[in-house]
Length: 110
Image 1 (cartoon, one colour):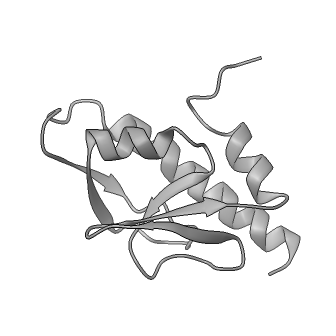
Image 2 (cartoon, rainbow, N blue to C red; image 1 turned 180 degrees about the horizontal axis):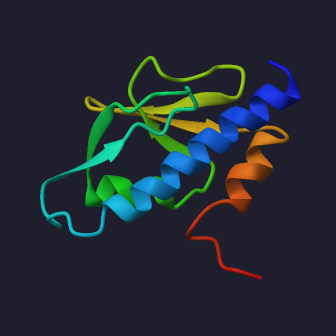
Image 3 (spheres, rainbow, N blue to C red; image 1 turned 45 degrees about the vertical axis):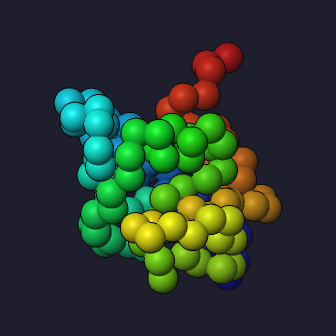
């Protein structure tokens, strides 16, 4: 995949992450919460379920995203965790890593 394609995928994933940050507000704190798959595929609107603890663990690293199994894009990310309801991928390499780190909604502003 060329650099432009990697950049597009990273931006798509960062956008879904930002949407999910807003979705957690108002959901019941116990049990499973519903989120949009954070994959980089255009048009994906499939839902995944995570507990608040699973979501917070994922958010500890801005390079990590929750996806449905099979939605990973090996050219720009690697699977680092597999769970029954979702997988966790990690972005690596330029420009993807830089994009997802700088677009993290939890990143302290300079």
